[in-house]
Amino acid sequence: MTKMFIKASCMVVLLVAFLMVPEAEAVTCGQVVGSVAPCLGYLRNGGNPPPVCCNGIRGLRNQARTTADRKTICNCLKSASSSYRGVSGNNAASLPGKCGVNLPYKISPSTDCNRIQ
Image 1 (tube, helix red, strand yellow):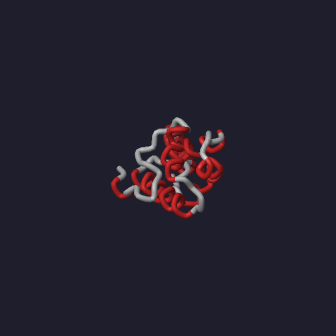
Image 2: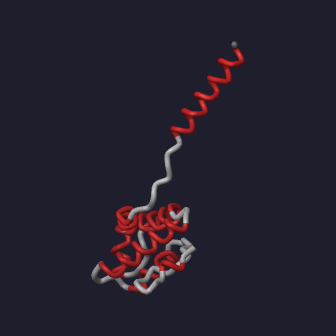
Image 3: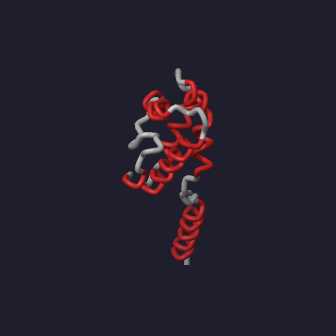
């Protein structure tokens, strides 16, 4: 009887632990835009991106766990780079490098996000 109780208790603990693991959520354009919003001054005027901007770019890289995430982030950055007035394409393209972040694509309206793996 004790062995059965221990096995049942272990199963309950495992089930509870499994249910507590958060499900991975897909990246949204709102998150992407929120991450790059602190970069707007740099994107328009150049210079050095502020640390909060680079933290946002690093956060995006860290969120890009799957091909779908990478494509979503790419498409959102592509859309945002062409929708904000006064954004320099050169500044957008150089932003990851200025922050010491390696993105597998260029931030540009001409980037083909479908080719991202």
